[in-house]
Length: 134
Image 1 (cartoon, rainbow, N blue to C red):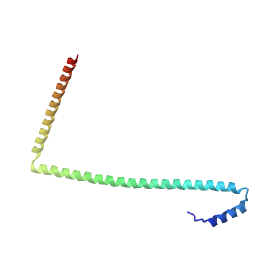
Image 2 (cartoon, rainbow, N blue to C red):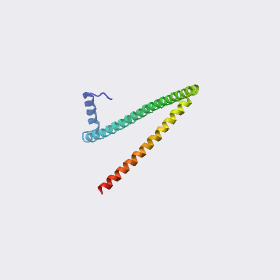
Image 3 (tube, rainbow, N blue to C red):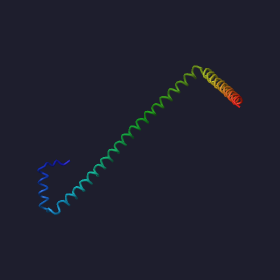
């Protein structure tokens, strides 16, 4: 910050010694040291605050860009969905879709029945094992 060399500091110390005197010079040096320390801490605090504000602004900008990209992707998905629905409506494939949905529903019911049967068989097996142990 300040570019003081050895000779500049020596001249300042000699002048301070002449003006203040040798009795009060150590106390003055201590006070100057305290003020310089406070100034450095204050400057460091301000610098840290400014850096955190800059980082927050950058993060906010990145977040806004990502939200815009998400919005664009949603629009693309909606357009694609509407294009697919139009192509199905134009070709009369609604019947095919309904048949696939019915097939999926039937498979769900079958798998539910199989699961229930397995559970009942497992319960019966556990109870027969318990009866054998008793």
